[in-house]
Length: 94
Image 1 (cartoon, rainbow, N blue to C red):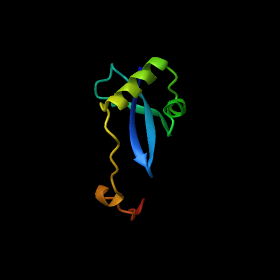
Image 2 (cartoon, rainbow, N blue to C red):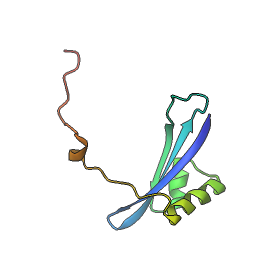
Image 3 (cartoon, rainbow, N blue to C red):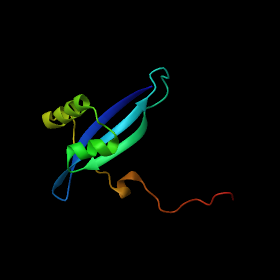
Image 4 (cartoon, helix red, strand yellow):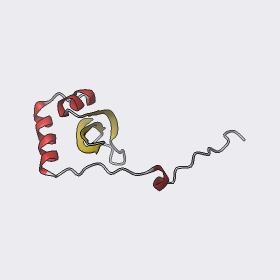
């Protein structure tokens, strides 16, 4: 079992927000996708990391460098109408 982190930014109402996600990865299980274990969002990168449970300074520097270099793209907003969301739910148990 390993823990990995990802990060990206998104501008919301003129403010830049940092998003940090923590995942658990099982390298021995090839068909098992990563499981999200933590999530942090804040206008301050260090606070977003703390909320997500990331305290390793080396990993934080690496993620921030990837964001600042443009290696990580900004988050894409997908509207509910574009995703095919339907507010009507089927009856259960009928």
